[in-house]
Amino acid sequence: MTDSEGPARSRILPALLTALGVMLLAVGLLSYTAPVSADPPAATPSPSAAIATDEPLITLPPLASVAPSASPSADPDRVSTRVRIAALGVDLPVIPPAGDASYPLCNVAMWIDALGQPGQGKATYLYAHARQGMFLPLLNQSKIQNGKKMIGMVVEVWTSDDQRFLYEISEVRRHQTDLDDAAKADHEQLWLQTSEGPAGTVGKLQVVAEYLSQEASDHASAHPKPHPVACA
Image (cartoon, rainbow, N blue to C red; front, top):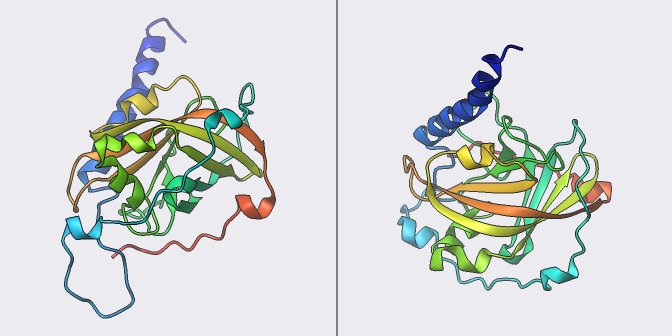
């Protein structure tokens, strides 16, 4: 590789990821809509009514009780299979990106291929719709003091090789329009994304979490049965 090729290559990945972020945001990735229902259509609720919730938060033990491992293990074949935020009642299977689908699927979370997977020492980026049973609790909480109560919550991510990774939420970013900072991550992180408004709303919510620990998990816990559906 020539001296001129190094800097050029170093600029390609951030540029591609920025372009990817803009493209996904432009087509309304993770657009907020009402939950899918098999019942006959009723009057469409307003966005403010749809996101309201009176469910109390589930508290967790102090993070000091979680003993972090020195560093995560790297496995090139590992992929995310499940994500849970117990404090918010979020628990979703994670599947590969929807391929040729132009709109993310419902009832699951997905990852961005261009970034990492748990244990690879960079950002793992998971996204899901802001709907009931998905990432709606993140959107709800982000609107209260800019998501202050989410700081310190534990996020669990299971992987295909029966591992469980723990992360601690450190930052809540509202109205974001690119993936630049996730692409530049130089250490183990987890990023969660969901939408902030109706279809076509450009800004997205990003929740950043820092690595705590890794441990073995039983196979059943790491492999929930996904039931993805096309969102209406």
